[in-house]
Length: 455
Image (tube, rainbow, N blue to C red; front, side, top):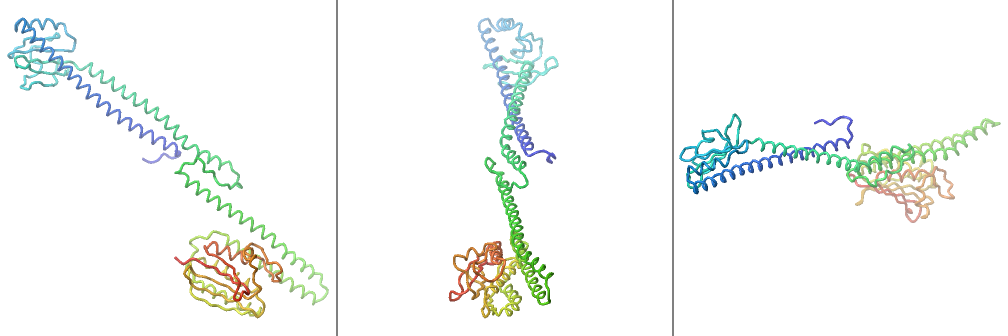
């Protein structure tokens, strides 16, 4: 049966329960009626049997005291007038010896049979009557008795109405109780829906699960997880906007100042120097915007459709080629110890990670220094390592450098303070672990990223 459109879950459940209860009560009423009807028929037959045996005993008693003819005549006289709807005949030697209850029938009510007793139906005055016949023990007297079942049928109808009425009353009471129970069951859901509906678009608190049925708890939990993701996304967006506004203020102010100086320059040398400063400010702003965009991208949830099986050696080799010219300009040697190390990751985000690690190392490695990039597979998973022989990171600062816009105190190198934050974020979305330690000989910095094995 198709579900009625527009019906609520509560209404559908209530209708289903009422229909099931109606089927159960109806079946019970039918079974009760059949049991009552069978018991009533047995009682009716037992009543006929009892009346027949009583009349036989009276007949035998009268015959013993007054003789056959006089005794049967007295019996017939004693039973006149009988109740309406009741006939009996006593036969002896195939002759009607006595008839009672106003019976004017001279023919047998039932055919004579050899059985000791027999129930049946006979037609009296065009109506069907219940009949019974039996012999006395010596088989000298045969009695046939018939009774109109009108009163018996009326009692059966009365019982039927009582059973049906009782079932209907119980069904009505059950329907009311079901409505109360279903309403109480769904009340926590209505409270939850009302609570969520009254919230503003800024209210992303978790939905209270108190009183929520166990079957609906997964739905509410999923809603809370969705709200958490939305809240996290909004916080990330707000943080990105605030960070961008804060960090872009300085380079934009520098660009404006250089532009003003360029406009007021009095000779060619001053204009050229100011133009170089202006270009440097533009480059720093461009780099900052790129870093902010990379961080915003890394903050996005990582979907399975972006994951590929990636060899860390290929990613490192590509980034080494990209940064080789810059390393030569800085007087820094780039080395690669690249062994295969496969993991399942987003190739674009891995490139962003390696690029920021190399950019960070190039900024802090002095001329004549060396940067080594190593990849390889280990028992716990593939590992990417970038090591330089720069000034290093003090141990108390090794966790703080992952904070956004955090710069080491006293460092002369310029930077946005976002590089290692991006590295940590990319590692987090891939389930990787980032660790910072001192380089070889306790000099410089070694950054290791340990990934999970490719499935």
